Image 1 (cartoon, one colour):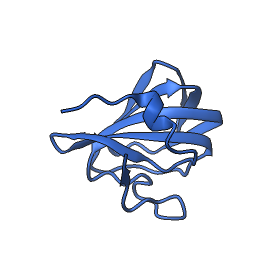
Image 2 (cartoon, one colour):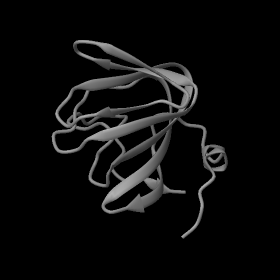
Image 3 (cartoon, helix red, strand yellow):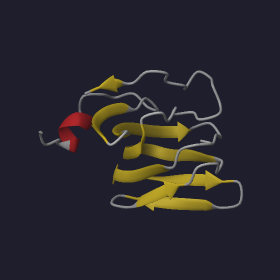
Image 4 (tube, helix red, strand yellow):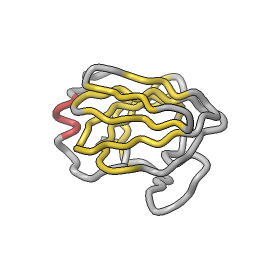
Length: 119
């Protein structure tokens, strides 16, 4: 058992859309990621995802609405719901999701990360 300092962990990487694992529990992973720009439209057929904004802000686009998220807020995206994160400026986000969750869900492409680094 050890504590995790989010500021310290976020300082270890600068790239976007590349989640890092910082913890695991009960088949779930806690991941840190930085966003900037637009991600791909995608969905996860079997997994819910929690997005918690540590620093900055972004919007989660859905086909029928957009949700603005600011520092200290979180959003749970339910399985099967198509979504796309978009950040005008850099944002630091903590994800909580099943270990089986692929970052691009049902879409594979240049942003897909098959295996994640643990930091």
